[in-house]
Image 1 (tube, rainbow, N blue to C red):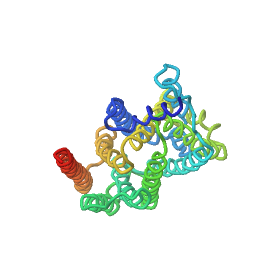
Image 2 (tube, rainbow, N blue to C red; image 1 turned 180 degrees about the vertical axis):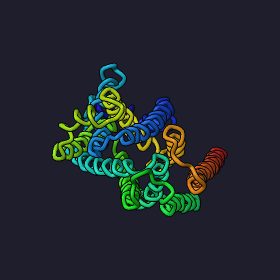
Image 3 (tube, rainbow, N blue to C red; image 1 turned 135 degrees about the horizontal axis):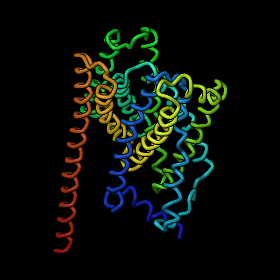
Length: 360
């Protein structure tokens, strides 16, 4: 029974499976909604005098109880015969905890960067995570480096460098040059850690045979990340200060404060849920490419919602970002087309061999 269940669940990864495309679409939609909404809500919190970077870190993983629905509902509704946490070995548990702590540190760096930088700027800088993603994918999962990959890396790197050089035109009132660069390098660090997280997860997911198990690992990782953030908040007096901050500091009032915290928790959970699903169903590099594509929406959201400056340098940086993304997509398209040709040639040779054998 266990073997048949495993074989059935392996189909989740197969492109010929009926479940593959719906799962892929749902996970990309979760990533889209979660990525754009969480970035805007995080900036909303800091724009209205919210000041706790530990709280901003905590909300990124505190929604882990929502994952229990994705883990237990399929089993309770008889959609799968696999019991939750079946084959969840001590090794996978330890790996999940370690990666969860790394994810918690990534969340903290993102919060520091987002507290200083405009949404549009931080989004464009985060596009550099694709550079690190390609390098780590080459080292960890033996991703092949092609012309389109390198072209994408160069263009996205130039995009981030332009923003750094133009920092004096992109600082809000009261933000010093030193704080701007703290935000800049924290955001780069967040991109670096997240780029490492993606191929590491791809390597681990190669030994995972179903979508439910991915969600189980994600649950453990986010529990570990939440524990790290909760420890930081407790040492910093964050939990006791939340009530004070909501009543006396946050200029939109207590109701808006708690609504902001709640939806931050929800949207970040959607973002990480979609990311994990994309890496499992495709690859770490494809997941990184999809996230980079969404960064253009974050830039647009920052300009439309918060009135972020969108001058010439940022426009050029956005064009380079989109150019780099399109370069990779074209390379991926060309590679897929070439693989289909090779497959057709192989099938033709096999058919000819069969004909010769039959004639003999």
